[in-house]
Amino acid sequence: MSEFLDQCRHILGWSHVLTEAHDTHPYLNDWRKRTQGTAIAVLRPGNSQEVAQITQLCHQHRIPIVPQGGNTGLVQGGIPDQTGTAVLLSLRRLNRVRQIDVANLTMTVEAGCTLQQLQTLADQANCFFPLSLASEGSCTIGGNLSTNAGGTAVLRYGNARDLCLGLEVVTPQGELWDGLRSLRKDNTGYDLKNLYIGAEGSLGIITAAVVKLFPKPNSRVTALVALNSASAALALLNRMQNLSGTNLCAFELISEYSLELVQQLLPELTPIFQENFPYYTLLEVASHENFDTLQTQFQEHLETCLQDELLSDVAIAMNEKQSADFWKIRESISEAQAKQGRNVKHDISLPSSIIPQFIERAQTALHQQFPSSRLVCFGHLGDGNLHFNVYPPTDSKAEEFEMIETRINRCVHDLVHRFNGSISAEHGIGVLKREELQRYASELELRLMRQIKAALDPLNLMNPGKLL
Ligand SMILES: Cc1cc2nc3c(=O)[nH]c(=O)nc-3n(C[C@H](O)[C@H](O)[C@H](O)COP(=O)(O)OP(=O)(O)OC[C@H]3O[C@@H](n4cnc5c(N)ncnc54)[C@H](O)[C@@H]3O)c2cc1C
Image 1 (cartoon, rainbow, N blue to C red):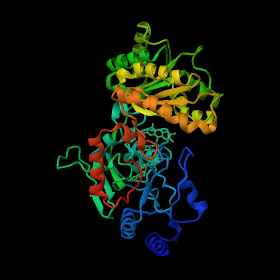
Image 2: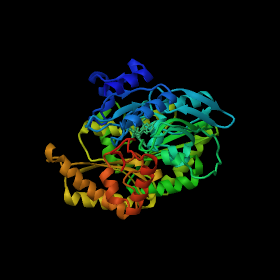
Image 3: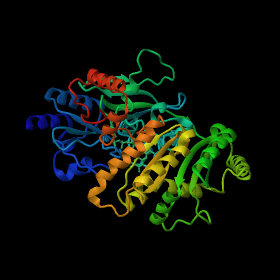
Image 4: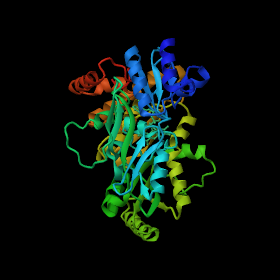
């Protein structure tokens, strides 16, 4: 091992080969603090060539690699296991923007750029990069593409996959593939980039990407709406899609208990409505019109919905500050939940049309088994994606959590499967959902995935034990 580490130091320099526990600790713990891995070392290359050289070296020594970006992943995909046989490869130093082509509306960026860095740079170029997640200050574009991240703007712009035109990738053998094409049309054989997107680092290491930019909207208006049921939320979504068309860019569901937890976390928050409602939605429209025109139009649309009794109450943000306050509510739900204690998380997707029926059926099934369990249901309703999280019964003991978690998972995921939904809408499989993938994917799907993995990474050196 010492010969291997010396060779790593020769490639990267001493300061970028971390072996001391106090240096490696932040890289080896997952965001939710549920697992801690062990690694031979944390390696911090500074450019694509160094990534390729290190990967060649690992291939030669048969040492597995766990790629990591911002370490905000929620399924433990970027953390090594406890055997201490792998290296953790942090891509965060690859943080240069190689090119912004405003005329082509594209940007070529290295994998370790944070999402927020890309949004800011796009804005400075008078363009817009729409991918947006609550973790955007820390997550990296390499991680976003490797997990095919979703977030709050999928309704209008699609997920990370839809925003990527080209990739640069280091293969498990240490070759550097330059697929950095900035073309919107390219039908030259298999679409290799789409194999690496969403592969969670199991097929290769993304070192750079070409992402799409968009003309910057002139104005955006946000509203918080109170509703009597999940069916009302779906009816409102359909009506607003008809009224606002592609101006509708976010439609987020927030259940009553989700809001209650946020209010406990942020007591300074002024209550938006006089009374409590079973559901709320956060809606946003954006367009190239000026703010006043867009706001008036949005207000008229929401008034029509109010008259038709599709919604119970509405608050429209009058300025950027109010809009930010509404978003803060939505974006604080994860933190508020964490403060409330351990809960069983699900990141599911279903056809939007089925969601109200699913919520009702799942709630009934859960309450039959665990009468005092509590549900925190929120998410990107516009994309059919729910974070359907369940607090175990209040009287259950800490040591019973894993057993309860398995039973709750079975209850929720079986129903998702019955409705032809997905057990992982946007967070990926990692370690946490690996057994669930084996349970619900078809034999053929699993076999094809294993064949792809074996063809590209026959020695199983890329993020072993994740996804498959
Ligand atoms: C508060 C909070 C809110 C979130 N909200 C959302 C949300 O709305 N939507 C959503 O989709 N996700 C969300 N996430 C999850 C997470 O932020 C995303 O999955 C994000 O894309 C991960 O990026 P990262 O750079 O942190 O990747 P990491 O966590 O470092 O890694 C994630 C996976 O990608 C692999 N990987 C990372 N970089 C590379 C690379 N360059 N090449 C190959 N493989 C790589 C890792 O091995 C791992 O398997 C949220 C997380 C938090 C903490």
